[in-house]
Picture 1 (cartoon, helix red, strand yellow):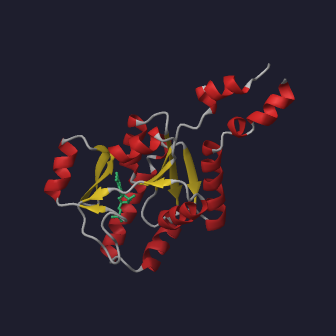
Picture 2 (spheres, helix red, strand yellow):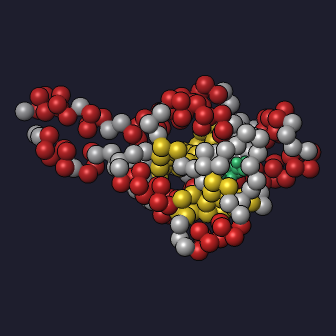
Picture 3 (tube, helix red, strand yellow):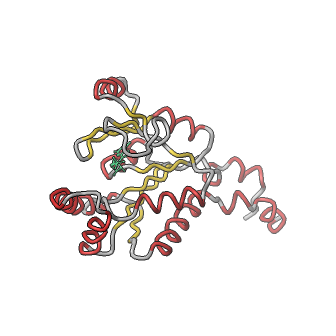
Amino acid sequence: MKIDSEFALNDSKHINHGKIFVISAPSGAGKTTLVGLLRERFPLLAESVSCTTRAPRGKEIDGVDYFFLSKEEFFAKREAGLFAEWAEVHGNFYGTPLDFLQHQLDCGKDIICDIDYQGAINIKKAFPQEAVLILVLPPSMEELESRLRLRATDNPEVIKTRLHNAKNEMRQYPHFDFVVVNNDLKVAEAQMTAIISAHTDSSIFHNLETIKKLTE
Ligand code: 5GP
């Protein structure tokens, strides 16, 4: 079949309209480290900054790590339909600003979101064509427990709750497009890089000239 560039350029299948990469994981699976590595590897990915009602931790900066809101402010935004999704996680409210996602997608940009599994499922409902859901899992419950203990940020009671919640979160895997088991950080990073590259680099779109010469 002859492909001319005009055809391919106008064929929506071959044009990158922007994807939303949603990364979820139970606490202790290594999501924060992996998302940090992916941000370095894909500097053009737009980062969605969520709104939250939880208090800032450590060096977190308002507008960079989160938009820190009071419950009243959060609920007002929620009622006004300003969130693409929202969820209550560990007793605090979190929401993904809709206008940011919409604007980035309209510009053809890809976005990375670090949100919980409830948010992931709802983003997929709101953006079925654009959302790519990736669930990061630990290699075993034992390893998850040992990582949570090593972090030494939580007391044993909190660790117990987190392990209990992790089971429920991991049982949501059928909603996800991809599952990455973080046994070896380098391997997990390579797998996530492959998933993102496969969805952002349209091999046909980038090779139009060559394809045209080969097929004319
Ligand atoms: P943390 O308070 O430790 O930063 O985040 C707690 C959990 O909330 C993490 O699993 C994180 O991915 C999730 N989270 C952060 N932002 C959002 C959001 O906008 N929506 C949802 N549903 N979850 C979020």
